[in-house]
Length: 107
Image (cartoon, one colour):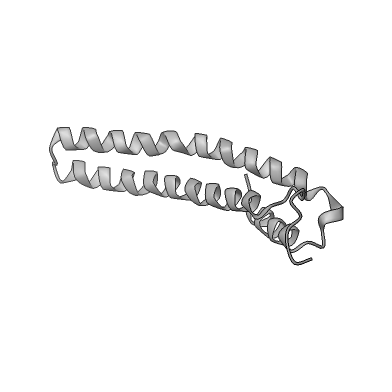
């Protein structure tokens, strides 16, 4: 078929949400790791306590985003899993793309 049926539940947005949230989760985890390394260097270099305190706050914000993003990703993946259970859609290009994305995500 040339277009996506409006009633078809697996619109490209469903897979896009999973991809975006997975990327966000990786980004926040990396920010935390990189931030901890930079924080250690700041302390080692004797940087100002105020600057260190503010940087710790930035790291803490990234840390707080990890469980929230993981929760949202888990929900999006669960929604995708439900849609992927519909074998009637297995021939659709969007189904195949969603399956590929799902196979890459482990939560």
